[in-house]
Image (cartoon, rainbow, N blue to C red; front, side, top):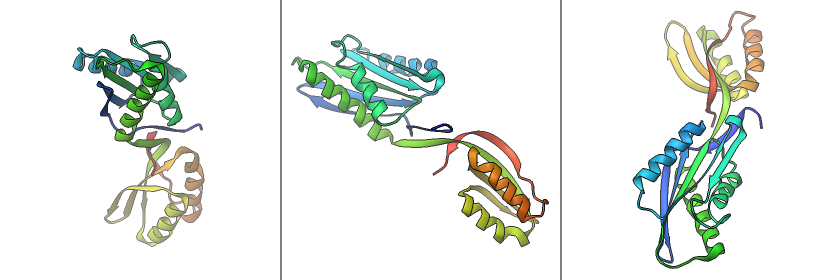
Length: 208
């Protein structure tokens, strides 16, 4: 859907042991390929003695998807990690699953299951956030309009970012981009053209 995407809430990691092999799942919110590769390098430096640092990332930038098995048998590591990210509906995300080999071979199916689990537990630890293209704007109104503005704000699902009650009521509000024009029109109708929202910024933001 245009104007909305889901990513992880924060960088996170979790781990488990499978038949003596230690798997550490890492996940990061990223916005560019350079940032994804920098995160991968961080993990490689921290776990430089690991047997493998398998990765996958999905970016809105260029609709880019990449993965690497990092020496594991083809199709048993990077692709399962990528499949988890796809299945969770995530983008602007990078996942790395580190493995310390424990001396027991897991086989192709076992590797797929282990790398899948490594990615899943990292995503679960991080949590998800939904970002939308939003408009943040300010309205300054007389107190006589405050009640009507409050109802209008609620009916359009606007988030109140900040309120200031001085000589006038000042409301900083946030709306998804696609709802802003209708809200601005209703504000003009409510105030007989006296109130015009002052747009502060446009960009990606949480609307929960």
